[in-house]
Image (cartoon, helix red, strand yellow):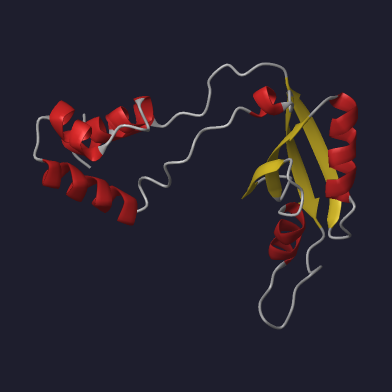
Length: 161
């Protein structure tokens, strides 16, 4: 990653709908150069998508929480190599309020970010999550306010300094 890549990413983050021709103009490079850089960043997985960012609160899901799950090891394992994590993850993908899940170290096995319409609705979502037999325990933390939103631009900028 070089300064041109970082500037291209910064422009796309600020204005996701900008076209390649306008990117090239603002970056001071040929259209083909901008397109080639963009294609390379996409193919390398640096840029993962161009879809809109959705604010869950704006569509009625004003409660955000983080749930640590402990998984009963061996549940869901198959001869095809399917692990307990895979089985629980498959269950979690059926619950729309589960926005992301990560395998973690420490006392838990998975950390999930979930949203709900209210605290009462959060209970419903947690009940759905723990209804799966492979989940032993869930520990939930409710987020009161977002202090630093998800961001990657400072990270990208640090790659070229």
